[in-house]
Length: 507
Image (cartoon, rainbow, N blue to C red):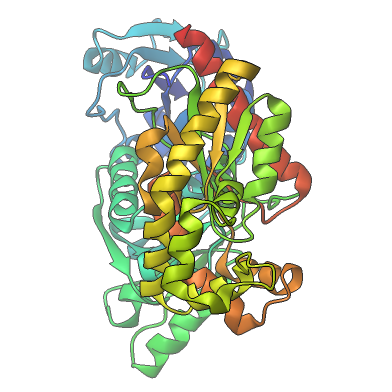
């Protein structure tokens, strides 16, 4: 990821798409955009908000998805350039800077920056479409999840900043309020989300007082704070704004003016995603992508490269392993190894019978795994006992199979599929861990339909396994098969392509 930072000063707002496209070749990590302070002559918060929304919506397409765009508000309020508290590598202008009033101020702030003129049209303040009257308010409030700030969040926050005169209060949903969200297990901790919101706000406008606080209910500070004047909502949450005023009315508090912002369309959406720019779409993009850098495992040989594939019941783990097998990986199924170890004559067979009794045997003296499962999934202590009997033996045989597959089939990447990999502590035997998960409700549904279990039995199976949150916490890459077959395939191909590129670079 690039760490280069640019600051664009613009006067020709109708040319923004072309100007941003011209900045793309500089491979920026962050691009700040500011309208020249002379725009304060036509300062209208609503009009600027519409302009800023258009810039944010088009930026992923013209700049590239990896650039963090931030539209500065401070120059519009202070009527002069306000220096940023960070190093700027490039100063961009969409006009020739020679003999332009005020430009020398910004050059003084960033003396070591490289100056780049991205446009040749002469300096002139283009106020077309920016004269719509509006009203500002002393105290403005808004709320949301704000997971991994995207263009929609930035528009919402920036519009609130434009409308606020003194104070802006932002409620950020805490970890107890996110469980109805799609892929909530991938949502960042509330402390991190608060930090990112505050940093963004202080970046774009240093003139306001910010209160960014966690909220554990839909109302947050709006329920009791008498010193609020306006609430900013999206078209999707407008009903929530009305509910806020209903509550305030019941408590004798003043009614808040409501400012509604339209959601931004996602120009890159696909069938399984939402049409709007959303955190849900961003979290879906994390599926099949590396969540953290690979950790070195010096105690393991680099050939073969071993990936532990873990997942809960009915998560689609086995189908995901098949996908990797078709892409070229060797696959070791630890569940099948466990089945082998249950067979008469195996050392584990007698230990299981001795501990769980002959009532678990079929007429032919083989172990009835359904009967055994009914016992262990109803009693955590008995499940732990069974695991103690099997785990070491399964891992030892898996290692034998991995060595054979590498020597005889020349497999350089081997997937060790094991539902209990993390609980058994086998991650030390793997270079990295990939996991499959699905929502709890979907897992129960699949078990009742596929395995013929009752809802109660299915719930016990799901409750006995590691939570999705713990799976994500210990995984380098995650997959979710809750959508179409094609989307699951895309996740697998993304992960495989990333790994192949990394291994080639290492070689």
